[in-house]
Length: 459
Ligand code: AMP
Ligand code: ZN
Image 1 (cartoon, rainbow, N blue to C red):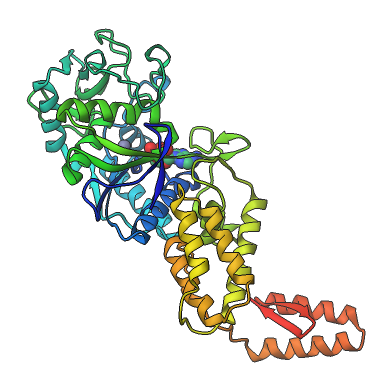
Image 2 (cartoon, rainbow, N blue to C red):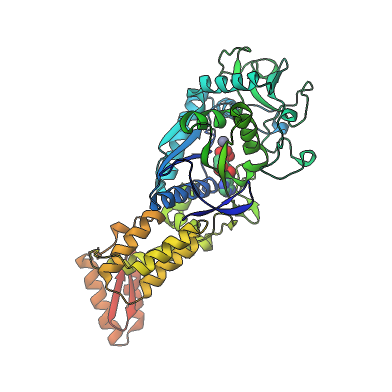
């Protein structure tokens, strides 16, 4: 049985879905105003692993993810402009062009690291009706009020508003996600906007819709509540996000959704820790981020990044360094080298498969599961059984290993001749010549290793 840490209870609990074998899982998606970086990818790989582990446990997962293309404001210091509108103004493109460009970039980046697409992808701008309907439910239940600038959720009406973060109300950071435009007529500083009117500094907002309260656009939080409930019902099994979402975005989602339905919104809250650089979160604002192209330009494979992320637990921070990426790339290369010589899959080795499942089910202990994979590689079993087992493991890890099992590299004649020449030089003790030949071989994309059995060639 899957055991999963629940941010709400602060405990590891047995995971039992509401309607097995179905599992409803909602993942906060990207705000498409800028490039996806590898910090984002850590969180989406985390979601991908969770989904694959649920499927390993034979659940039917409906994985819903949003695309935020309206309503997400930048920081207070930055005058609270909508991130999309800002992106458009700065690039001279329309907001719709900006959204399309960065959404495409997001998919390209996630595909490069083998992330499966969610079952449902929901854009905020395609769900304005649902968001208005949800605000109406909140209006009926007495949770909202209106100022000339916006419709707000009155947090004083919602009991235990900070239950997810466990913070005291007074210490709850306002504007951690900068969703709050300072409106002097707000009743409580923590009240958050459900609907902004296109007045004042939002008068020129290009994305706007009519609503029962007046023309405007939705706040960022309401989209996730509206779309998750639209596709998964009033109560979801799992909701994921980065740890930064706990005190504001997810806290507000709970208030809105439970305020409207009167039911528990989410049964398991799963939060991924950050990818850091020099002890700080990798983020656009700190300018300490890398994109997937930069990884490729430096000679690494995107899948090496995936391997690197699999070696840390999702609730632990990872400090990104090029050395650690190099170590991950080497490990992945070695793994492929091992399995190239294996026979085609036959029966699974139960002992290793069971231990792998146990690790994955133990609050997604993927580093331990990867450890099991390596233990199996080094154990003496028929390679056909190892092939079968590793293929099952890779359904969860997603490293594309099926392309390497039993696929010996075909070495061009030109390279083979150089290798033979090099072997002769070595036998004669002409190491200078042999080193020169090694370099020539490398230029052609191959590496020679000297083993007791003779030369071994790798790509
Ligand atoms: P954003 O597009 O900034 O709203 O971020 C999308 C998702 O990526 C959120 O769930 C963030 O928590 C997550 N995220 C952003 N930066 C990082 C990082 N450095 N490490 C891990 N997750 C991140
Ligand atoms: Zn969200």
